[in-house]
Length: 245
Image 1 (spheres, rainbow, N blue to C red):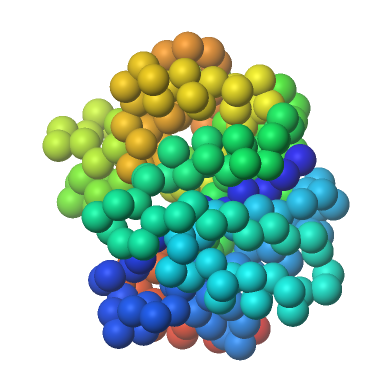
Image 2: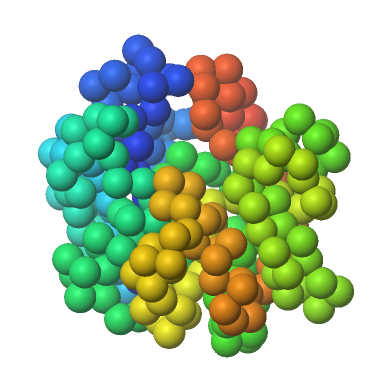
């Protein structure tokens, strides 16, 4: 299985910290955000290669970071974009990496700016038992937060009935963070999804299309995820993880 990390954004809400430095490499409790994610994934023994998708502005910084990591195999893919104005969007970035590397494998795809207080091992095990593409979900009581994320309708058997990114009128309280397990069969459908008109900016847009084509399941998270979206949330995450050490 390959682990693909989406890190091609420009994180303008975190300026000045990220004006000349990528958000996924900001330090939390003594190590970069990506190191937290990769160390957890490495412990599962399921990943044989990590792929970090970067924009052109920050690719060299990711390459230096990867070169200094002698524990796992990390490849950095430069998507060639230079600003928010010409960015590809997450779904097109995933397809770009698949084409550039000739990938035909199960993929664990995740945002490079989220942290978890639980291991992803349970999610991987769930997806492999289902033999299907899977997402994670958590219950969000505050309606205001539902307008800013992917929201899913889920059947009693965990099957994803429908999903919508940043809905004006949320149809449930199940939020879907940017952690996805794609079977290799379904990863071959990404280009078809793009050609069919699925959204390409938010990574969940492909899932919203895919669940209308085949079975996708939603695993309920056993803990909390931390989305580092602005300076305030970054400071909160640093305090939280410092306390966990």
